[in-house]
Image (cartoon, rainbow, N blue to C red):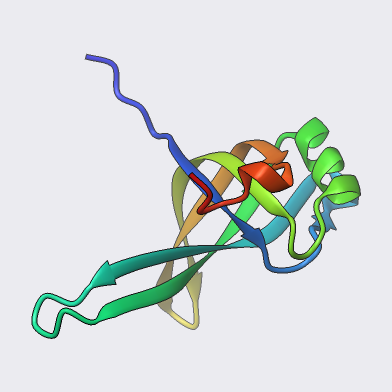
Length: 114
């Protein structure tokens, strides 16, 4: 069996993409919204989750730095990568979200539109 580390995000950019390592790496955050009905009260609830994307593909990173702006609706295909490091004698664990594909969506394709 072949396994896959892939998930898709659709949401809104929280801030302009920032470049690192001479523009070979880019990072930006995406806000994703979710809604549900509370089981006990029946009340509709909403929440926003923030995910920081890291783009390691130099071509995609450069495109994002030139084209991704705060408020843009975007689509991203991502994978999860875990890493750790030592700080003050403690192990710090980090889960990175690595975007392999990033596209800016047209207004009719905005996150949440069906």
